[in-house]
Length: 640
View 1 (tube, rainbow, N blue to C red):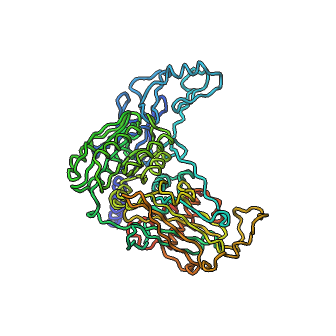
View 2 (view 1 turned 45 degrees about the horizontal axis):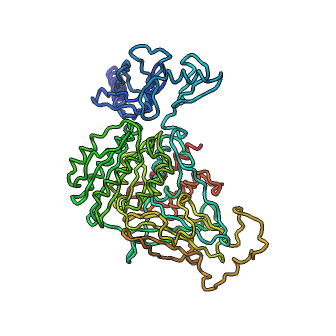
View 3 (view 1 turned 45 degrees about the vertical axis):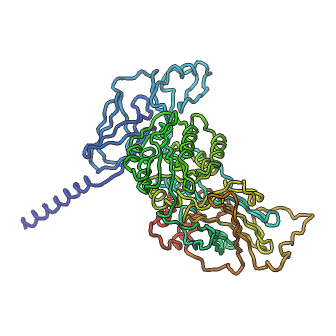
């Protein structure tokens, strides 16, 4: 009996010690921020040393950090001028208060700016502002709120916001959702094809941080076009092919939903013409940190691995000024290119306009006739020196569009991300735009989708739809609000439009209200001087089976004259059986509209998104569609 008890005790002790051992070996990713003990303000460039691994990371310019360790490990927070703090990790969020080595008088209160100025004293400037203020008046200087005629540092309240807060210093253009249009009033719908997908990865970043994105961060067409679909390949002389599918709209069963997909021809990497790349890299202070410049460097190394000996790369950087840090170099000299990338550091203000000017100048100097000439801009979009306004950037990039040099805009960072500037550059130049939130996304954009990201097969691609009033009463284009064109622009070859990369698929959706279906949208009084019944009497009965006609114009890369192709969508194409792609596209479109708080999907929920997406998983080799389902589940949890 005693022997059995002894064995039992030993067994229990073994389990306890095993549990302790497993606890100590449990991996954990820790996030948090470092604040000044006196000022309660963020401290940047604090070195965080992980004792067990002899490695370190640093806080970003907003005092935030992230690292992965084992539970129970110790980390040291240190910075010149402050006392070090030693912490044993036992949770996944830490807020560290660093004490200055000597007490700092309250009137010399220090603070960190949100971007480039580092740490400085709020002293004479604040005192002079207070002297000119009446009691109670509030003025904000660089994120510090100052109460009028106060005398103590406790009266200063820092309005610092976490980069994980969607109400922070990020900027997005205002999006007004497309309304339903009456066919008898406007039978034509025209827009520029958009291959960008930046909105999707940006949305994913926010959801993974536990919050819904702001509505203006959602461009539904970019969510849809993040994914590739099984469209038929072009087989003729045209580098693009139109694919269509039509069925019942799942969020309004009385309506139709028509999918217009365009597939660009594939070109094997070894058959691509030689490339002349200029890496244009923002190394200003706002790019400091692991999700900014360090991620840029890792991304460009991935791209460098794809270069061939016939390709060339130059590197231009900009902060307070712009400069060339690597002259145009053969693509097979990878070591030289990577060394130049590795040597990049962040600091200073942001002269983005000067950087763009220099990058295009160098690209023009090394221009390859019949080749692929492209500037690859890596930035958070926070331009604050020289040309910096959206209008100024638009004018600048429109001039560069005429050079025959294409533009790829890669967005990085959080908390200070200027999406509106990125969109201006990508849409007004011969450009595309992606947001890189992690190294996996960099690999997707720059390696797996290298051809479609870096090599265009058609430019100025426009679509125009003509709807048959005999069958369609109203229509609504879902997304593409920033890409709408006038109907006259379709046949005007001087009007700029989007570009399609090799192998790219791009999709547009229209919600259609059939004739005879009562609509609660776009209702107006009957017209007195026009025949309201005209849609019931088609002018030409030979078109009686046609619902709509899709027209597409494109230019070959080295041509200024457009070509036109057409495809008709007929009533007989309406089907109760749809492809997995169609179900998945509907789910993403519904998701985007729910995030945008659209009036057109009332009565639906994220559960509907998840159900449709699971019906459309199809051949999901890379797991992107399953990741989307998880994001929809996350959005449902956050919304609740």
